Image 1 (cartoon, rainbow, N blue to C red):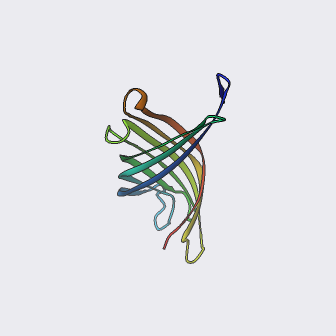
Image 2 (cartoon, one colour):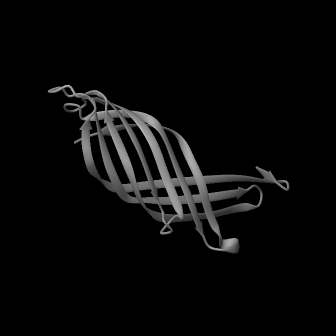
Image 3 (spheres, rainbow, N blue to C red):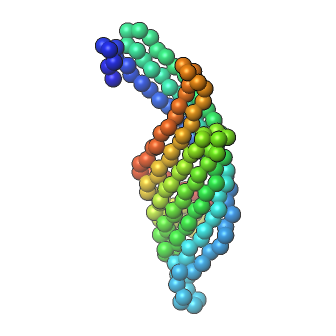
Length: 165
């Protein structure tokens, strides 16, 4: 980016750590065939925290660099719905809201994943999953020249591997 003839190269590093737990409200069969392990759905309530750390560098070419970092912790609550479609295939939909003025004024997350269970070290102990995730923050701190504002929505594909021990 060039502003008033000055070339500026921004660099942002973002680190997230989410921790929490869930409570299973229940699991219900989606098929009424007795004695068969058919599709089912489970609904969980979730609660925890999301730690955010941002490091920003602005390189003003020929002039110098301006750097800063910010971190905060957001409480979050949400819901997760797990559909076991077959013995191997699953679908997960989840979302959360948080911040509540403790860290961010408001933050939210929503995602959907398709998973495939397979044998890695034991019986169906691994799951390959892929899908889409969106994450948003509305964070503000300070005033005037010292004001920091992070009002961002990030979204995109997600791919992962989960292993159960």
